[in-house]
Image 1: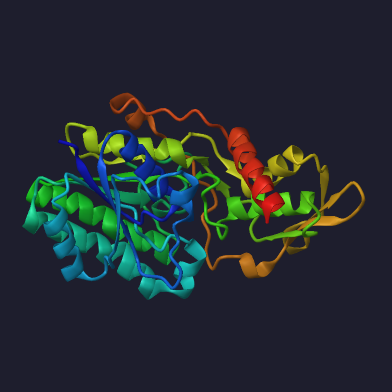
Image 2 (image 1 turned 180 degrees about the vertical axis):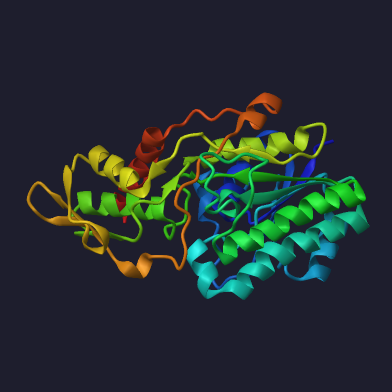
Length: 341
């Protein structure tokens, strides 16, 4: 008999990749999505699984505790992956309450339903490297202190500690994956990496002239999302519920990401000035990158570099896609998308 898994947030980048992985492993997958004016299934369509016979899409609001209880009682899943979130950090500053309701209370409702309905259900909580904030540590692992710098990170930290508390207090198999930045062609256009690759593709095709960004010097540990969802699944197959960091162990600035993409697009750029006046021109002197202060965050994390030694040792998880490959993958996808549109 095939396993049954619930994925909250299935319409997002990670949800779609995870659904494809579980379906390939023979799972019956129940994808939870929130009600919106226009259904957002393009990622499932892009992966060719939207009409898969073993995929059931269910509209449910995880901030509604009664709906969550009813869902788990009716499906009787073996595993639950909680990927639903308001995950765009800048929006968490303007929508802190909505962010907290979804990210923190959503996890609480799921854990309570598991505790009452069936404590044998295995639960995965999507935690984030943003919880570490500016700790001053050169790298971050499972033992590093947390210092969240945004309402998003704070809401995720609540859910993270709640997951650990429920595992310890009620002997649930509830674990958290602290995932560092992971990107792909399925990343939302509002996120900086996809904004960069889409804009560079448009510049290359003559559709726009310039890319506007905020802080060019924030450094992140970027991996490929498709590899990271494999780690999520591996966590729920492990003998005991553990917290695992997933990361590449290498960190690059947003400026370096921009440079890689322009190099791949064969558009040489040169930087001028500094601070809010910093720009990049191409060989013809056209400004291709400029700073727009509206994209600055009220507070930002300077540098994140993950240490995934525990995941490598215990799970055998080891990412292979480096930043250059990731940029190429995303840029080529956005070039094709912009050629068609």
